[in-house]
Image 1 (spheres, rainbow over the protein chains, first blue to last red):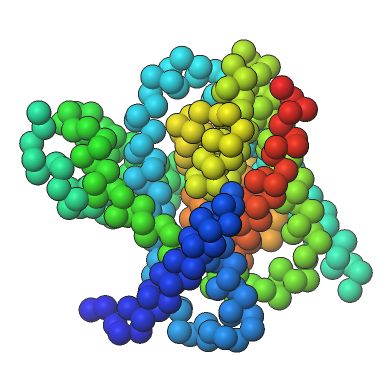
Image 2: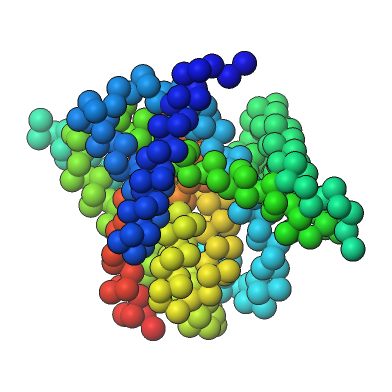
Length: 121
Length: 231
């Protein structure tokens, strides 16, 4: 069922995660180890230290199911029902209003600047 | 007390994976964005736990195993990032500028709206990092005097809403660029938004991963300077 290449590529991803976590802890950074691991892996792909074919099997499998890994932290919301009930209006309005504001501000800026760069070429 | 079997890690794993498979099937059958598989699974599992009177700690024995896989999955985002690198390089200025705008708007609007509607300053502080991925958001919240549990809940709600509506909300203001839709979804709604963006297309998924990664960095750096302007 699970091919050797998948196990091998999963091990590479775990190694980058471990190095990322070590850097995050060692330097006491706000940025979590998984993001640092992602940056390091990107650098290794760019510099051809690692061939993308070596990590594709596990990477594509994990990314196709990435939503599943957010289910447990989502279920943890049930621990905060009391807090949410007390201040539901500022919480809900802050979340919904701010989500829309970020989506619109980011997308509008991105489309504006993307078009300008395309025209310059 | 609760039955022993609910405390076995397999309980949380089987419940999560089972609900996830059902939720993805429902999503595919109906095709409506309202039925985001993350949201469906979360609601169904909370329902099961409440009805059966099973505490979260029991479920989370298995939940932690799936949580752990989020680590290598985030590392794996380097793959779509690398595949889309030409597109990102051509739009490097647009990418960086948009994320910085999104980060500042996110901090200001979350804290500002919460205070305006009678929220305590603790709630405002806790909401301010809500657009970035959970581990970064909680780290920031602890550092600046927020309530990490409220931050965690706000991050997840933001992600679930973004996973359900982000692309449609962006198209409402007339933005059609797939680059912009992906980047904004990840900037605003971190990993859960990225899960949705990956379903929209590889370019959207890659840009969403870039937005999530950059916004985590930018918000961690900017928030201590931007937030005091509102308190």
